[in-house]
Image: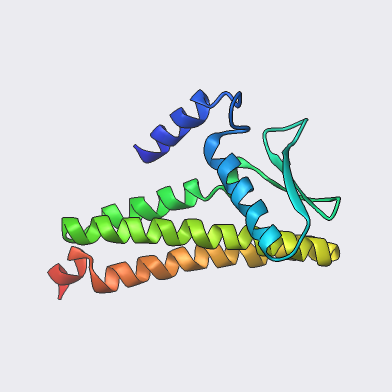
Length: 160
C-alpha cells in the first residue's frame, strides 16, 4: 500500500513547481544548506536532461540528487517491516515516526558527506557511492529492525 501510494505521488508529480518532485527537491535544497554550513560554496540546480538536481560545489558539478536519494523508499521498507512485526499501537506509531525521522536525517548527512567525498576524492567515487554509503543507510535500518524485534515486537513476547 505504501509503495502504491508513493508511486501514485511520483506519477502525479509533474515537476512544474518542484523539480523533479517535492521530496527530492526538498532533500536537494536541505543538502545544499548543510553543505554551505560546512563552508562549501554549494548550489543545487535542476538537471536539464534528467529528473534530478545537480549539486555544484565551488563551481564544479559533483553529484546529482535523484528520486532514489530522497530516502522515501528506504522509509517505506522500514515502516513495512515494523508494521509486519507490530507491537502496541502507540509504541509502533512512535517508533515508526522516530525511525523515519532518523532515516531521513541520516540520509541527508549521507548525501552531504558523499558530496564532500566526491568533491575531495573523485577517484573514490565507486566505493563511496556503491559500497560505503549504502552500507550506512541500510545498516542503520537493519539495526533499527533488530532493536524493534528484540525490544517491542509482539512476536518476541508470544515466543518467550
